[in-house]
Each structure stands twice: as structure tokens, then as C-alpha cells.
Amino acid sequence: MDCIFCKIAAGEIPSNVVYEDEEILCFHDLEPQAPVHVLIIPKKHFESLSSVSESPEDKELLGHLMSKVGVIAELLELENGYRLVNNCGVDGYQTVMHLHFHLLGGRRMTWPPG
Ligand code: 5GP
Ligand code: ZN
Image (cartoon, rainbow, N blue to C red; front, side):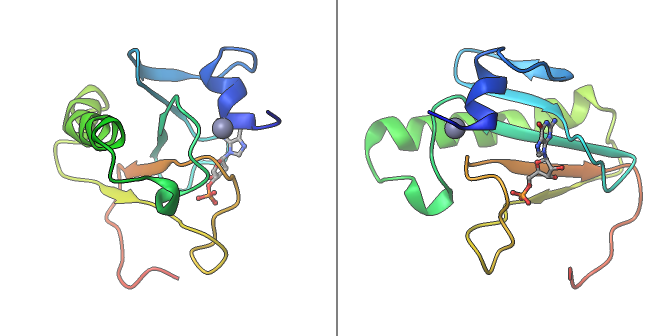
């Protein structure tokens, strides 16, 4: 499959890895929008958050990913907090069609987002 994040997950394209286990990978974004900007992806390909099903496997995987957000934030020393973002589909401004969560920190965020 011609998916850049699948290739990163498989190690075929290099990335700056922060955290990895059997199910997920966290690596630094190529164009950081904050002092800390990493992407957390399931290694399994989902086109977007809307492609996640209610199957026990998908629930386990997404629950696992969410349970690691705090662990990753701690690794990145984001003790003052952070923002976790998922852009979904055209209106969400998703540009890479492999499910990913942006973890941003190291500065005070603003609200509302653009
Ligand atoms: P989206 O707009 O889909 O929510 O976010 C895609 C993100 O992936 C962007 O922040 C972009 O900078 C990042 N990105 C795109 N291609 C690559 C890549 O090859 N390597 C890394 N590390 N990040 C990428
Ligand atoms: Zn993929």
C-alpha cells in the first residue's frame, strides 16, 4: 500500500522515534507547529478515525494508544500540559490518510483552533 505512515511504521522511511511498541509508533512531525510536535499512530492502517470500528480488536488498539499518551507526554517532559489533536477528513484538514494523533506542547496553546 502506498501509505507514507505505513512505510514509517515498517521502518522503510526513517523517522525520529520517541516511543514504539508492537501496536503503535510515536515520532517527531516533519514540520513542527510547536516546540514539541509528535505524531502517534497505530501501526495498523486506518484511513481516519472514522475508519475505526467497534470490534474488540479496534477498541483494544485505540484504548492502548490513548493509554500511552500520558506516558509519551512524560517522556517529552510536557509536565505543564499538551494538546492532542486528530484531524479527520477534508473538513478536519487531514492531509495524511493514515490515522494519527498530533501531540503538541512546549508552549501555551490558543483556542479556538483555526
Ligand atoms: P494532518 O494534516 O494529516 O493531520 O497531519 C499530517 C502531518 O504529518 C503533518 O503535520 C505533516 O507535517 C506530517 N508529515 C507528513 N509527511 C511526513 C513524513 O514523511 N514524516 C514525518 N515525520 N511527518 C510527516
Ligand atoms: Zn497507512
